[in-house]
Amino acid sequence: MKRLLSSLELPLARLEQLGLFVAGLAFAAMMLVTVLDVVMRYVFNAPLSWSFELISSYLMVGAFFLAVSATQAQRQHVNVDVIARHLPQRLRCGLAVLSGCATILLFALIWWAGAQGFWEAWHKNLVMDGEIPWPRWPTYLMIPIGLGLMLPRLTLGVAGDLLAALSGDMTTASHWSGDAQDAGD
Image (cartoon, rainbow, N blue to C red):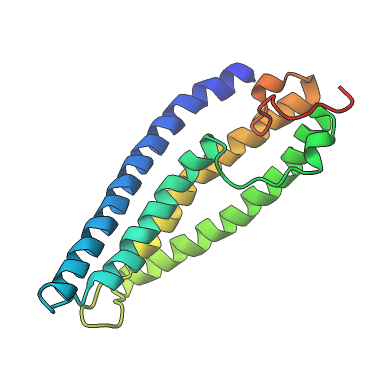
């Protein structure tokens, strides 16, 4: 089981790095468009009418959803562990399995809603209100792409936590870094 988890890690990590790279490009584009808009507004008195929609509806959404799985892989999401850090390691892993399963269910529902939103926007050729009729489908597409990376990441984490809870081998645990206090083990 440990070998299987390791073999699935590399291809997922490569896809996450690609998503992180594209998210970085989106973030850089947000900065460039913002600087350009400020210069155009205050130097030439001619602001970019399309900058807000581009940034808020495309670039920010892409930056978030394309980076979310890589962030999870690096354990950089906010984690409240005030109580859990004082529990025995195996119990922490068991609780991580339960919370991981609930998270997978929630994210699967969000993935499904995003996929349906994309499909509807694509087939109905939906556009945003505003000066420029930006298509809506790219925004909705970021949700199933980003969560399509996040769901396997969460599944690998739950599998590793389950293995750790059953075997006591903390090297497979997705949530435990080894620096938290170990109570009872």
